[in-house]
Image (cartoon, rainbow over all chains, first blue to last red; front, side):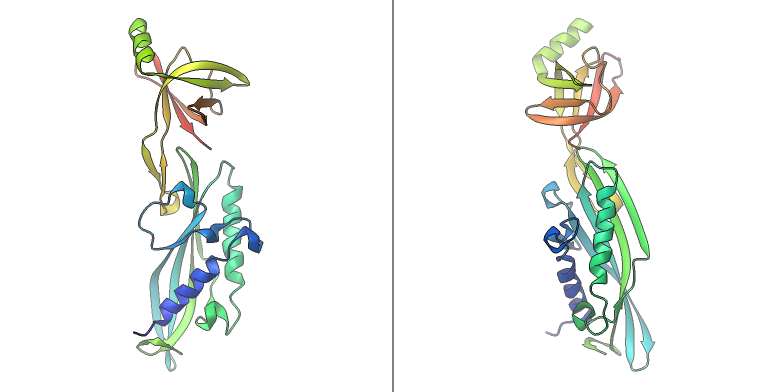
Length: 154
Length: 96
């Protein structure tokens, strides 16, 4: 069974996000717990973590190909007693990680053309038995396929 | 009425250490920590909502930021809610 270019893009993004580790020079170990389309709550032991979703793939015709804009939603979740410093660090870590992988021809394993900077961000905190922070960041991955052939890169 | 409350707490409460501004006192609390999901930015985290029911006279000095140590776990007071009769106070607790 062939693998769609969208799947290859998501797999490459998953690999990239898993590099967000303190050992790699980042502030937080968000990459230790990366989940796609997680539909159950995270346990405290799984924090900090990322819940990711590829929510929408918009296609437009271009010359000899379809140009895709794949919307990616990343939710960073963490526990912290601070006043927001950690979630700001999480924001910076994610942006930094994405930025390491936007070079032409090598973007997300060579399957993507570019990653647009995040165009939306929401930060929220809720305090119960723990103080939980959440950051939702939305950005788009640009890639191309042959017309009506999601399995063939253009 | 106060006598009834004393009996109630002596039967069901556990000892805890309340620390307010560096001064600690032993108080008796009825502790519970039911499940609570929190949903920052629509990603849910599984946690609890710990709280301690106390006699108001025991915790009148407690404020946000005071600590309560129960069964070896230290919680921070993040809420102080008077009971309906003002004889009881509910301390809302958090580990953070």
